Image (cartoon, rainbow, N blue to C red; front, top):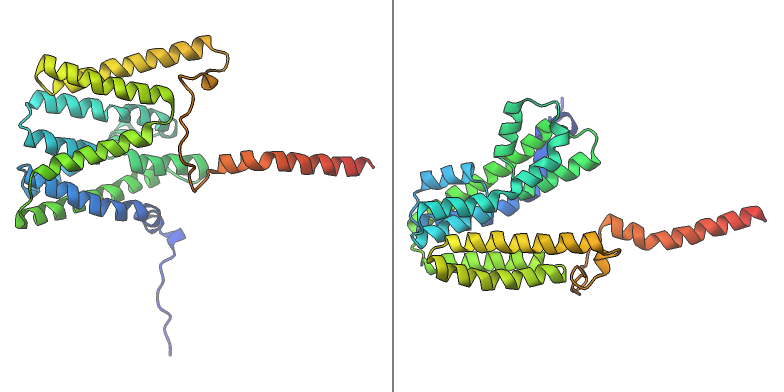
Length: 284
């Protein structure tokens, strides 16, 4: 007598289905998390402290900055202020999800907020917007899967760092490369490029003035306010703000992938022509 092998149906096991959704994110977190763990260990953290930071902070950019500031022996106040303003964006990200948590308890919202980052936010926002069956518990599960993957990568990296000698100069290189990539990807229009250049100049000025890394924070706040004021004024007084030079887009290489909205926009004229042709044939 043959016995059928027991198979798990993902549709009847939400934890398994959600694991499949989070798996690409979890796999991408492991190598970056290992690199971050190695750098944190090189900056002076043991593997237990690295694991704790990865769970409490749970932000690649913030942890890379933390490693760099520790190497530079930056004061605690500068470290705190830098990480605070860097992570302040989560207040805006979280507010866009607030409508889906109207019936959730404050304790649940606090737990969800503590484990949110950019990548799992993107997954949950997309699922909430496209899947009517997506629940807040599913969203929390995605966050926990990604958190486990990131913390595991950090822990592995810290253990590797304890066995391998790492040159601390790589910390500055990794951080510089990370933020150059972030800057390049964010420059989409002329105002962003101008504010980027202005922030570089003002950073040197405030660093010389304060002789402290707090100068970078002052530069960031000042240039951000200038950029906001310029954009707000242009949008207020211009009839077509996106066609102005200051808000005009910078010509970049065309992406190989297009979004659904772009595909629909490209196909719209053809669909309209086909519809008009059908109406014309029907009249005949």
